[in-house]
Length: 270
Length: 122
Image 1 (tube, one colour):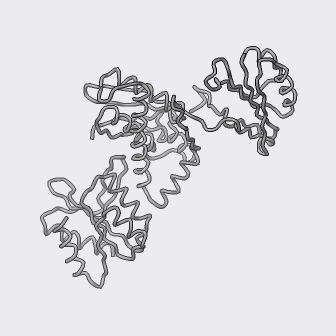
Image 2 (cartoon, chains in turn yellow, blue):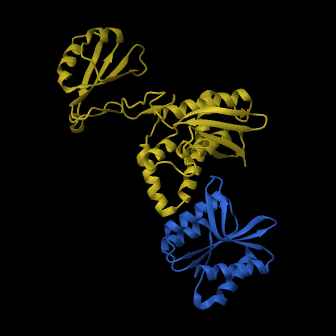
Image 3 (cartoon, helix red, strand yellow):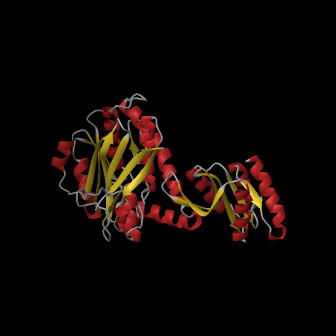
C-alpha cells in the first residue's frame, strides 16, 4: 500500500493538524541559506520554488502554528535577504486545516498548463452512484475517457520531449514509457513501470502499483470480483496508440483491487 | 412484454437465415461485458443486435445504450421501445442516429411488419 515505499505528498495543498491554529506564510528571498540561518521558528512544512524569471529569487512557502506567526514575521522582516513577507489565514486554518492560499493554479510542464485535481475516493464514489443509473456503461465511458485523454497526453509528451511522430523504435518507446510513468506518479495516478515491452511484436505490458482506482476501490468497497482500473488502463492504451500510430486496447490481467499485489495491464492490437 | 418482443425479433432473424442468441453478452473494447436482448449471428459474427426497453425511455437509458454500442462497436442495432419516450430521449436518439421501433401488444403484426421493413434498409 501507499506509504510503505513512498511518502504520500499532502503538502502544500493541505496541511492537516486538527485542533491547532495554523497560518500560511510566504517569503520572497534572494538568499535561501541566509534566510534559514536567520529564522528560529520551525515550520510544519515548507516548499521552496524559484520565483518568476529572475535568477536567485525564491518563494518560500510554509505552514506554521499561529502562535509562531508574530515571531517569524519579525525575524523575516529583519533579514536583508527577505524582499517580501506575507501571511494568510482563514477560518478553517484556525481549526487546523492548512489550505494553500498563496499558489493558484498548480501547473505542469513548461507551458504552465493547469493541473486539475480530483479527490480519488470522492470520484470513485461518484462513479458508483452513476453506475446506479448507467450501469456498466459507466465503466466503458471511463475507459474511453481515459483513452482519449491518453491520446492528448501523448501528443503533449512528444512535444515536450521533441520526439517525432511515427518513430516507433525501442528507445523512443522506452523514453515515452518512462516519461509517462513519471507523470502518472506525480499526479497520483499510479507507480507504473514497463513490465514487458517488445517493439518488434508490438507487445506491451505495464505493471502498476497503487493505482488510484484499485487502491481507492479496495478501501471503499473491499475486494472486487474483477479488475476496476478502467480509466487508467484506457489512459495507457491511449498513450500507446498515439505514440505508435496504432490502435491498442488494454486488458487488465491483474488488479490490486481483486487481491493481486499489483495491477498488470497488457496492450493488444485491435 | 420483453419476451414477446424478443420472440418476434428472433422469428424474423431466423427467417432471414441468421442464427439467434438471446441475452447475448459481448465484450467491449473497455473489457466491460455488455448484454444485448437478442442478436442475429452470421458466420459466427454478430451482424445485428436488438434491445427492448420497457417503461419510459429517458435520457439515462439512451446514454447507457449509446455507450454500449460505442464500446462494442456494433454498427447494426435496433432499439424496441415498449413504452413512452421522453422528449429529451427523442432528441438524443436522433442525434445518436439510433434506429427505434415502438412496440404495442395490441399491434403485434404491425410491429413485425415495421421490423421487417427496417431490416431491409439496415
